[in-house]
Length: 339
Image 1: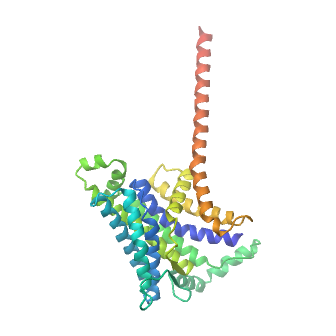
Image 2 (image 1 turned 90 degrees about the vertical axis):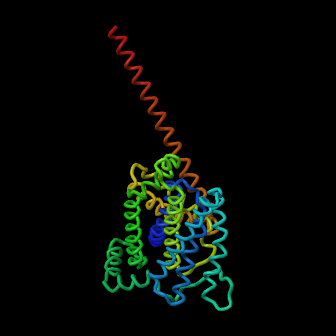
Image 3 (image 1 turned 60 degrees about the vertical axis):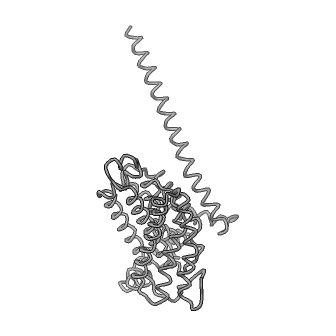
């Protein structure tokens, strides 16, 4: 049980980067971007291909981020310059990326037009390098001994991986918080809230939308690159339903932790991604469910995350009205007594 939850936390922290990208488009920019399903694979395919061709994992990850940024910008250009519906522009880019990703992964084989997957079983990744450094410090053994002392015998032994993804995600969270408070970030937020108003201040909303979509998909591609290195493979189908996972993380986090400030909201999105992965892992341990039911479980989690807060708000509103009516009755009774 502990090993499954530990792995879910690791994956949840990586997927949180993707969820932050989804948050930028759906919540901040108010743009229903479906490019995510394609740009996630673009990041994974680019990083895996470059690693297999002998490039350093960090360089491969940086190039994957640039590839995701370009994909997001293309979606923005289709919408702003091509005057295509936001939803349709994302779908078109997602479809185009399916073939582009095959081409990218096909670069690792001679005379191959497209390749559906790339294994990285014997390749160096960011995690393998950091894990070696972490193990040399003796911290892995120390942490595992602490767990053994409290009765947890089966330990994953991947503390280095957990620490590196945690540090990366926290760093991105603070960068996102800072960026959204800058002049450009505030302009992007204003564009999502009221495009006409920001245009009245002579702001170029087209450029802001393109930039916002580019940054969003850069984060998504970054997450895809890390997932490919974490799971030791990249597959052209690994991005299917990724937008739903991102939305689930955002909705769960916002429902539990609230959205009063930007810092609180980004933290809520990260926590939502981790909670989603843990719930999914626990659900799959139920006897009558298997891995083929993951999409169904995801749909149920999203539905519950959407419906439960509505019932909670209605219940709070009902209690508030009852309390207000009671105070009015008491006030009237007090007035009649004085009369």
